[in-house]
Amino acid sequence: MESIAAIIGAPIILFMIFVAPLWVIMHYRSQRKISQGLSEEELVQLQELAQQAERMRDRIATLESILDAESPKWRDRV
Image 1 (cartoon, one colour):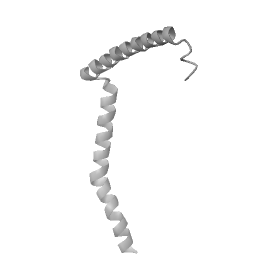
Image 2 (cartoon, helix red, strand yellow):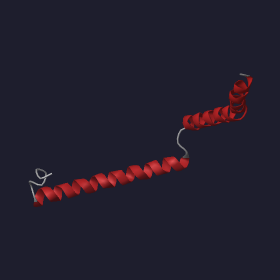
Image 3 (tube, one colour):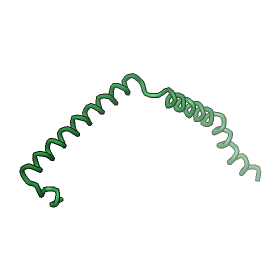
């Protein structure tokens, strides 16, 4: 019975000494990073994506107006 306790106890002790502290440190580091918000680089990327989305929206609206003029029933075929 003592050998079973040693077999089970050793991994638990190793986990508590090595893995658990690293796990806790990494968890709180990621939480701190999340609470800090977006970095300057991420903010620039977000603004660029928003501009691209605006241009894409305008292009889609233009394409739809062209299709409406050339083929008024194109929406019914979809």
